[in-house]
Image (cartoon, rainbow, N blue to C red; front, side):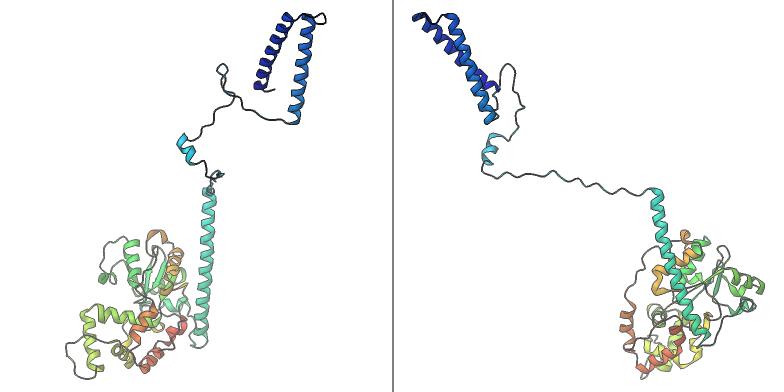
Length: 396
């Protein structure tokens, strides 16, 4: 029973006993002596207690007791806001705040599992690249064997005349052969060999071609050439003829003015420019340059714009890898992986930055070239278009 009710009941009992004693003292009765009065009080108390007990069963309630100086509070006091804050928030609705949800970060894979996942990703990428290479080589092989009638030549035959294999650069340290095509990232590959693989530093671009670290196939004896052709990994990088020739034109006649190409510029202007012109002019237009290429076979002998089909033996030599500059972000790392030097160079590790898309450059430069010139240009570079699966835009 709550302490508050028991205390009040005690006060009442004391008062009743006092009144009874006082009454008996004033009005004595033969029916009630002191013993009888005590018995009546006990019965009355028992009756009251039973009544209170029955009421508590029917209507139970919790009455918070007030603090007791002797025993202290029964419950810890609630810590509420200060009085002003309580008055301020008295009319505000109560908001049941949910406990914050603690997000548990996912567990990182252990070293072994993380490495396994990385290897699986690399494995899938390598599988895709091998499939791409199979498709490119099958496409080239079908045209060479069929329409062009130029089948593969045995390595014994090719190696017997190494002086004819002028575009091939040999690296014995890592056992690969790079078939160089100018205006297709060739300077970068020369720098990889000279600086990253052979240890020479800060070599100027114009000295890379003749650097002693580059060993060209014509410098080998036939027996040595045959052995390397059989056992080394052979790769080539190609490019859309439109982009390659445009790159050669801008590099040799617009952005730079090397004395050799300035002389060629004067020859082109003297032969293909109509109307009056300055004899010392070297400002060749793209149309004049293309007319120069289609006019004479000898004009196409320069390696910077020579047809790949006639220079790098794509039909006769079985290349292990055919890379495309347009797909450099995948093809360069794949070549580095195949020849085992990916950890020796940073080439190909960053995203290839380009000033503009090929289509934008074509539209800017080739739109002013007469259609008959573009038609003749395509006929000259037709094998490079078809062998490496490039398309000539219909607008040209």
